[in-house]
Length: 291
Length: 258
Image (cartoon, rainbow over all chains, first blue to last red; front, side, top):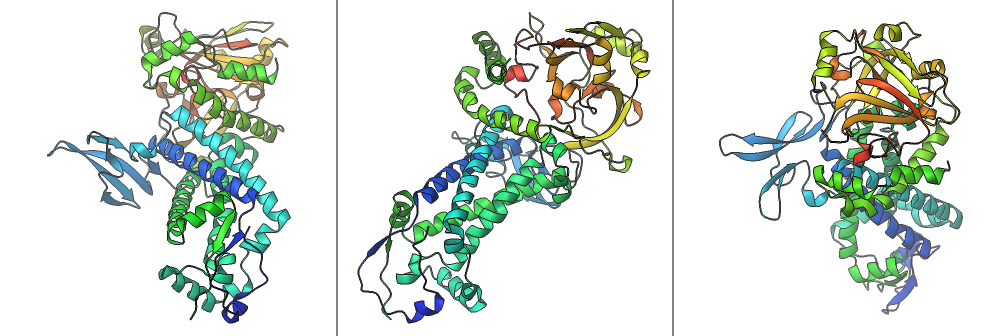
């Protein structure tokens, strides 16, 4: 939870400069901190086990059916270069081939030997289709339980309304552009503005929490023959079983992109302060700029 | 039998099984067993949540002939090894018998023609391989429930075991034959059939001729092929390595609704 403030964008601009002293506020409630770290753990597990599962059939299709021989929208393969006798990693996106040796298709083990496999071995855990699937579903249930706790908390304490839903003034193009410009210059929020999430942050969190994660869960369930027996509408929602698998993979990539940007922001805006606020809840507000 | 007991039956592994598995699998089972037990809670949750969702026994979506995929990759064995099966192929399964026994009042044995003369169900459904691919095919066969009704299941029966003619690995105790099991919840579902025809033709060898199971709410490995023996049992612990299926004995989940 971001420390509540009635201040809106207009008053920030005219607010008197705060005294140049460091103020420490209580930024994140225990519920947000706990669910955040459980969520982080489940996402890592879901990613590493999910990549392992993908590795068993590294091709994505559109529609209800898809197997080797059906044109794929995305695939990763290891080919043998008969001239050099070396394996070559090839990634195909919508019919276009890219050599991706070293990263996708073929990667190198600790001894420098090429290993074929869709993703590098260090990214995939655990070994084996059976264990990876068990890990994926155990983590998925944890994500769902954790997500429900967070949703209930967010709804009933006003966390969503107060901290995540952007205010109308924040959504004005001028304000959004100004925020983007601040981000490009890696300018950190100070004073009153640092008490709340900025609008880009709010939008990113809202999209991840209310769009991407639900799409992940639903597209994942569309791959279950038991769940689709009960809810066949899932096939229509995702344009087929294989399309759901493709969307599941695509949105997983968006989540990875979000996490990478999120981590970069944590570092850029003060690693120690951010980590402390997500562990103890306490967050130091930088004094207002004197301009 | 309580839920917990059944769970431990599905999860539990004996030391003997562990040594056998580590001989043929890359990952030593003794290393992963505690991890497997922790991770198992996901499948436990999935099974109970899905059984709740499916309490009304809805049918899986059936597709139209236009939706049938141009090809249908075979799962697992594509032709069983050994002369016994080859002789069946040569005689076009004229001497084939399907036996239904175990916890039934009337153990039965049928020729293929007798099975074909029973009430049939035709369904166009999606087949989901646990590796991620899927295909759509049309299946014709006798509802398993019809066979079980004819044999008159005893009230103690809880699982139906399918013994197959394909030997996956040679073992001294003959535990290397493919087999599968489902509980009555799935066995009595109207779309659970023993199929003898695929896409309007006799079931091809690659797809489990002469009879294969279609248990539509599960992924591929539950759909036992080359079935020649069906047994009704009250528990699975005494069969092969005790986990209810060839792959289940080697680490896969017994419940495969995903």
